[in-house]
Length: 262
View (cartoon, rainbow, N blue to C red):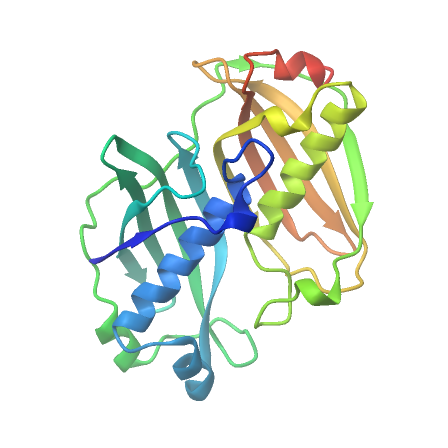
């Protein structure tokens, strides 16, 4: 179990002075790296050994929004390790008031050419499985199906967005999905800064590269028992980059589904 204190950087806060969902995902990523470094496996060591982990799926929930300056308590541990290749990591954020956010990350161990491979014995020994019976994070279920108009936008990733593995880093896909929703809200005359994150899941297929054509298709698919809106997103274009589900509401209690044409 790795435990530490963490907070969002100033640039992660939007106009409402709270963190965007993608920024919470970046906190989760940073915690996973810190936890690995604490047991002797820093990013530099992975490079030296010609080995790495890549995220192939992740589910997160947000119990409340986080403002700049808040200090959070973080806990993370390895949940399981299958065939020495596929592993889940759990991360929990909380403060004195209770839970703040949580995620289950799904990682695949890869070699220097990003091909799935078994992790070396020294790495497996450094990342023992803990608390395997604790439930993983799940999305809230759709209880009222909805159908709405399709919303699309296209763009090209910048060269200056590329991560250490030379592709778009996984939290950016949450930004892409929220940007698709935000553009649809702005077109409908609704302030997109009122979008509140509730939960999301992204399944990654192929990493997007700088200069590629990327299209984000967003659809309304339903409501949860709490009345929050569930949206599906396909991130494609030159390749099937990712599929995602986001659960969102509006901060003022407005009807998000109606604003999006459902």
